[in-house]
Image (cartoon, rainbow, N blue to C red):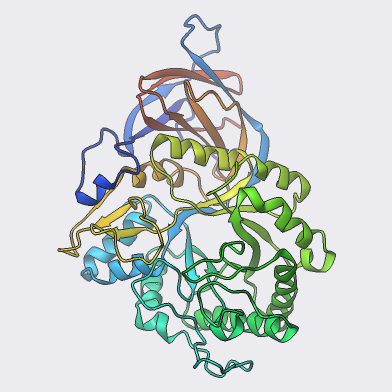
Length: 467
């Protein structure tokens, strides 16, 4: 590795701070906060020495200990966000997309979640790609069409993103099969009807969706088989037992192989608390497990540490954190815990609501998104601190990075997670959740640096391995 022109003897530093994390006040207008990916003076490495200051926390970074590879960090382009973006002028919309994905103008998100058909975050009547009159069926899928996604500017928005950031990867999640396939006869509630003919029809339906997107110039890297399969509620949803998802995984793998579709399959896509009972029956089945490429998880119930258990049980199946919006330094620490427990990705859910907390059809009241649009003036918007707090990770931890060993620290002082990028740079994201500044040192490979992190702030520290 050639480290010419790299600051091998110094450490680069950036800060972001929280402000009223998760508060509804953010929908009323922008607020000032102290740090927003603000670069600080470089720090210098010194020879390690005994601690003289009892207040100084020691974090040990061990680059020789390597763990999971990182696929990406990003957010979603569900219809709510697309709807708000589509109301903006072309230059403003492009600016927002650049702020999400660009190296120079943004925070370099490189993994985006999209939906196959409608979700609860939409301004539209719920729909799928094969909606037909009640009482009818369409096993041959003659009525299949993604035209609704074209009409709603979803396809155009994704194309615009890919033109700005060609290295972006997309994964897709369905909220419900078409109503004619379900016991409820509706996109709300219900289950996939019994019988192999329905499993095979749904597998074909998803294959056609992936191919239709590909024909639009939009490759889908991966898909989850069902968003939140243990939830049955009054918006698009479908209860799917692990046994039924196992059948669907086999059918989808067969369908994809028969038609040369390379999209990867991620199972579950639900909470930590239920993951063991759900994934074990699928992955312990030789045939089903062979067609599964990863495990998708949400963080609305349970603890991230269960991911380490799942990794130990199924080390060849990467784990992806596919949905959870986080706020403030406690959220940044939660994200560190995801990565410390083998998550290979992180995706926020919903990128832009407007100042009326709209549009959406979720059954609760959402918290503030990274971008908030003025409901009375579409080209006016503001960013919440979460944009910069997420950037403390996404601008510095690149696809292909590996997590490396580091001592966690303490919530009473600082916590952290560390990575090595493919270019040889090492990155430690350090979080101070306390109300006072915290002093700490990092010990790594025979040298150390000391730093002070402001209260309620996240610091990213980047340096280059000397080889």
